[in-house]
Image 1 (cartoon, rainbow, N blue to C red):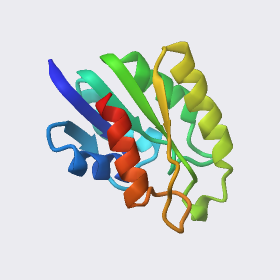
Image 2 (tube, rainbow, N blue to C red):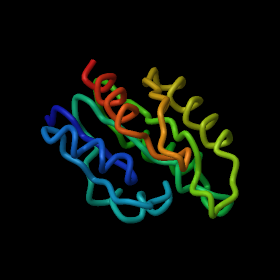
Image 3 (tube, rainbow, N blue to C red):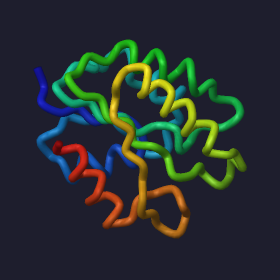
Image 4 (cartoon, one colour):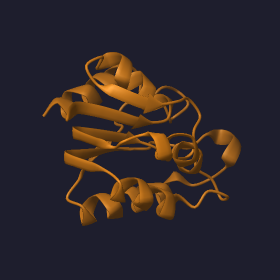
Length: 141
């Protein structure tokens, strides 16, 4: 079994660069729906620790909750961490609090750990250097 698996969007890809021992299935700009379409069938979500970073690119035409529920149902791990999006891509003009509530609810139902992004770049979405370091430290526990 893998020690660590990081899945998701560009935030996940950056976390994986900071945690090279973790296997990753991530790509910049992916919504939850696009991640599932691109990776779900060929990605075994089995590891001691799975870190999920999705939702920052979700919008009105993405069915976030069912997409994330499918992802979580297929995840087998001792610990699952959800990186809570701090904001959405501005072009979507979509309130991220909806996505945050969905992630918190799914995490609570599964006794998972939610990791809020506490320090961001000016875009309000991407963690800054300190924000990434804080996330990486929490994932090590």
